Amino acid sequence: MVNLQQDGLVGFLHKTHTEEQKVVEDEEDLDESKAKEEATAKRILPVGHAFQSVKVKEINYFDGVPILSSRDSVLTAKSLNYDMIKAGDFFDAKIEKVNQNNQSITLSINPFVKGKLHIEHMADNSLKVIPPKFLEVGKEIRVRVFNVNASKRSLEFTKKDSLFKSDAPVFNSYREIKKGDKIVGVVVAETEHGYVMTSFGNVKGLLTYEDVKAKLTEGYDESQFKVGNIVKAYVLFKKKDKGVALTLSKKKAKASDATEGQEGAAGKS
Image (tube, rainbow, N blue to C red; front, side, top):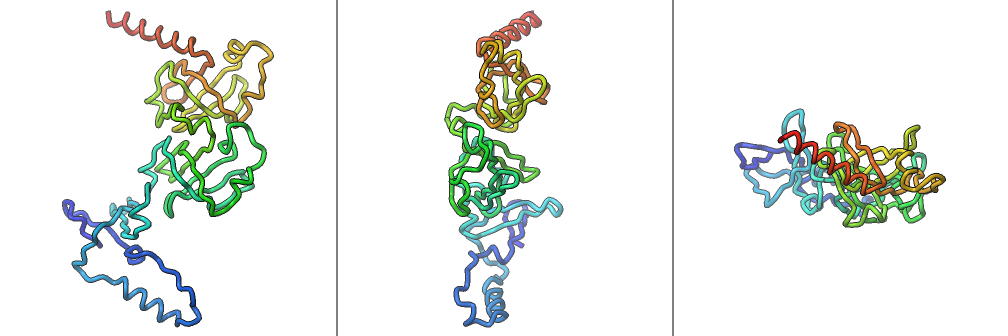
């Protein structure tokens, strides 16, 4: 146990996290049990030993004790746990596994934080197979966080060029969204009413067929709205933190916003 000198707070530092793990290159020249004993002895520290720095790796919520590490690889990691990450963050992540069955790849930011890059987020347009550049295990690629759920230790990444742009609006919850806001989202489904889109922070919205026809006229190119394609739309109204109604018309969204403002002002007068 390590005293963190903060109102009596203590943390648990496992002996394997007091130094970097070293790989023995010539195992035939060493007695395995003796090597383990020596390695363990080196990591036994006397009471009163002071660490220059440690970092909280995770929290054991059952015991209420922070789990610590003093490894350099952990101390220098940009983001260590899921609670530190927000939608819109950029990372250099390593391809750890290719999942052909569900058409995704597993990426790791560091040894403790991993996430998925699904095929619909590998390019702006819809894809049928995973591109070769995403099949090389061990390769490092630049990605952006599309959604994070810290409680479930879940991360979703994107590589879409349209979502990499600085002007792509990023939301972390429905509470941040207002009428008239622009949404750059990905088509994820088609229902009897219209196209379902998702954006940063797992924000979901519905773009109705009626709205699309009004903007693009009858006989519009439906391929623009294939699952996986990027669509830019505007917020008409929110549905009590359950989603948003969308429109392709910026003018229509702004008019809706202005109408609400006038009604609010009339109610106060």
